[in-house]
Length: 393
Image (cartoon, rainbow, N blue to C red; front, side, top):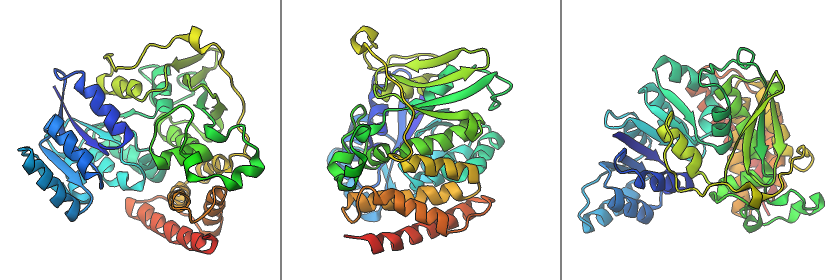
């Protein structure tokens, strides 16, 4: 019986994880759940799964959650804040941590899970984007297990040998091919992207995701962050990682080998597949996802990404090559810019302009410690906020 903590339980990944867990009550038990401010949704999850602990973002949210649970006779212990998140991620009461908090806020509890030697199901790509080597060092030093949840990285994981040890050359890997749907604006006239609305940017053609990740998909920053994540997960340099536009989202990613073979993972676009794969690895369990019927899909298309259409992808490759705290600059500036766009303070194409200015106008150094990374994150957010203020409509 695996005891599971879900960080970010009310988001799309958290909800999908609970759906898979509910199908296998003989294998999994929920130890703890967290959400930032969706108190009613978290209360309903606590009623359904009866976790021992629940964590929210603020004291007020904790008070409201406690009241709702008391009305239902649920005795889940409620707490709030980053320290509480780290506590449930590292608790002896949990074996497996689903790290699904979006953004930099997920770094501290995910790192706490690594330092506690947990099995980490990594859906929070920012942990690796920001802290890279520091995070991987913590995983190895404390005997943690790291399994990727992003559909692309899980596909790569499934397409590599089980004995793979972050050495492409030793495994005969020629290239890692990350597929990307291209988002909602793949064929839209580039000149009209200045006029994109938040509602349009959040309407992904294939995946059901949160608003922030949906905008990242529309700009392809999501794929850029995945490139950086793939570098750390699989030990692949930037020139061995290639992004391929694949609008159908049937092939989730591929590995090309030196003998000419290409191994891919295919499936319907549903996050329950990689979640089930990581939960049960090395076994297989039923996920609730329909079997793929290629005769219905019919055609699979591929093309190279256009960096003029998707400058955020080019900026991510630039940050990976620069190294150090450059990815932390990239990530922080993106979070600020995307939120400003969602708040309708800046335009869609202002997102990449804000990121580029933050990256090019601020020095970056070595990612020597978590404190150094977080200090750079704070500086980048301040710089991005100032730029946004100057652009605000």
